Length: 288
Image 1 (cartoon, one colour):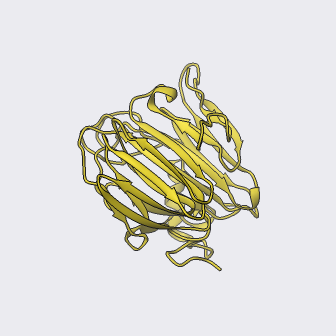
Image 2: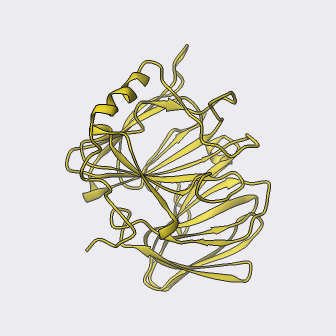
Image 3: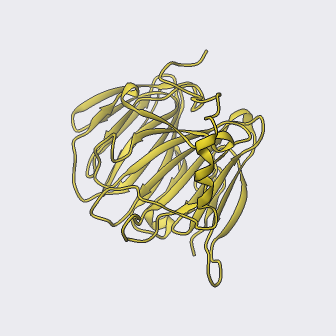
């Protein structure tokens, strides 16, 4: 049985404070590791069957792969700026090193094609303001189908101002049909000022095999093999960040969702509301 909530440190292994693989999650495609390096530290690893992005959560790094080296500037924290990143393909040997140290997310997907290693500049990241009113949030589309070429991997960052809800209305993507794609999803959380956030995941029908309504803190992770997910709730005073990692079996790399019919009407209320004026919480300029 899949464990849907992973607390910070529960799957730590060496330099990795989080390790989620398709095998450990009980599914076929999506994975995530978080690499923590001390000042002057480095880590070398093989990507195996997975394509991967090296995404700084804090600090900068040098990424070496396939005879190329990419200098990734990074950021002070996920709440300070939109970051640059590096993409590395399947069947590669990779070394990540950091002069000042830092934490680096490695969202990944089981891939069939081997694409070239590449650098992704922060200026190329599409920053989208989604929703309205207290459902306003910021989406950093650094690796979605419209902004960056990959084989299977879809990954975005979401920032939600304190007291707002995101991933709302609840939605799912667990069936291959018109308007919906089958995607496994990882939510990795960080909360400003070490505060709390909350996440809801559920299924309808007999048994309600997934029924999660949990407090989440920095470093916690939620696995969503199927079912409705949302809202992701930011407590008043505490901005909420999460990294979404998605992949699935469809030959088309597409992020297609279906809203929970009980709550889909909420989208219609946004037409008469303004987007939260606190957004965007981050840009490509580092906050002082």
